[in-house]
Image (cartoon, rainbow, N blue to C red; front, side, top):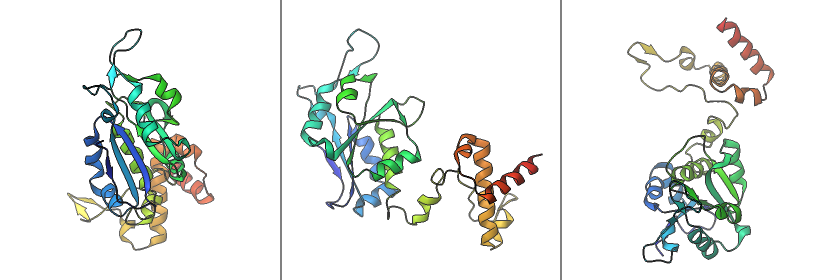
Length: 258
């Protein structure tokens, strides 16, 4: 077999596996930036499996024509069943996630849910027109979609989910507050960020950020987050539990917009 474990041999590493017919697509991303460092530090382990290694014909066939006719090709069930039986025979220790437009929508709440699941997360990446329905019915423990749009395969969604879950683990980010303050983690969109230079082409950093008054800075940031969320994602703001100060800030925003 040519499976690739992009991981160090540390038993405490959070384990993920990706089953794909394009393993290099996954490996490239895992070999860079935060994912590479998390793997090197033994915080996560990601095994990449080539589905074609679990076929049994000389052409390593993973797709066939659909019963009943129709456009496109359908991914065959045998390789998926074979890899599940050989690598993850104990269903209690694995959670097979099928990346599918029919799946539930991936959100930060789902990322936290997956983080809290101590089973190995195994991602089945589809390609072509569809995957044989028996994979949905008998192998998948979960089906997840990253949005209402169409892309070529499940590799990018699997990486999106692994990245989102991994960054919640202690030690993956340089500062633990980064994950806590990310958009969606607190229920609101993020506030604006600025860095040097102070002025570029006459456009300045907001004065409050240069004031050194951390209480005012925190309040400004909360105000900007509430304003951005109310403007761009009102659905999030409706679900957010507003404090007394939050309500006061929202009144200020409404008065400024009059």
